[in-house]
Amino acid sequence: MKPEILLIEPMMESIEARLDASYRLHRLFQAQDRAAFISGIASNIRGIVTGGGSGASNALVDALPALEIIAINGIGTDAVDLEHARRRRIRVTTTPDVLTDDVADLAIALLLATARRLCVGDRYIREGRWEKRENLPLAHRVSGKKLGILGMGRVGRAIANRAAPFGMQIAYHDLRAFSDVAHRYERDLETLARWCDFFVVAAAGGAQSRGLVGARVIDALGPDGVLVNVARGSVVDEPALASALAEGRLGGAGLDVFADEPNVPKALWGLDNVVLQPHRASATVETRIAMGELVLENLASHFAGREPRTAVV
Image 1 (tube, one colour):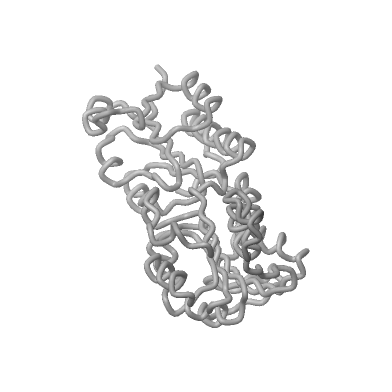
Image 2: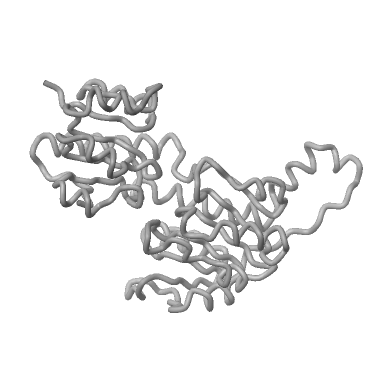
């Protein structure tokens, strides 16, 4: 008998085909009535495959008495209650490392796009304004500027490595200083924001970081500062961010994540100093395949009685 798996959201077609080959796969995202769908299969589900943003609620976990493993296709664990999983003796796995480069690449892309006003220039041409010789405001330089990074984990370090060739001065804030990081550690987040020109959020989501970048940190960045978020929308006080951008108290923002996805505050839509992306930092063919393959490996290891390679619980 193939183990039965509940798939919360779509994956690469090739990865889903391999899941179908090894497991009896139930696609929750295709169900019209999700509650009825889960009720009909609950007693047989031994694994959940989900995304970092979707996770698996305690209510869903508790509805599945035979559940053994939650395989997250991503690195975020904030949408899964890890303590609850431990109490239920449910394994939880993620897909670290394989998406680090793409997330760091997008952070730099958002930084450049916002500072150099790339989307504004694109619209300027498409709307025929260049032909009319309309004025286009100057952008801001990136090279040689000061970069502050919130969260010096895998992604934060990869961002710093990419920023260094731009001649940027780099400092960071985290729960502690790291002896293997050469960049300056700043204990106070507001001080870091006041010092830097560009502020990149790369911290893990969850209760411990919710609203960490609040109004005071945003105001410390100031009217020439740029905030980039490739972590979790919950880390930033979104209403405070939107107000600061609209009122000119913050220079710009490049955002890949939001507090209530896919609902992006309408206040951000019409702002020329904001670049928006629909949570696509890891959305390349190469990385999504690598992530999916790691999900498959973790599932196979678990059901074979081996320790999953990237288990967090």
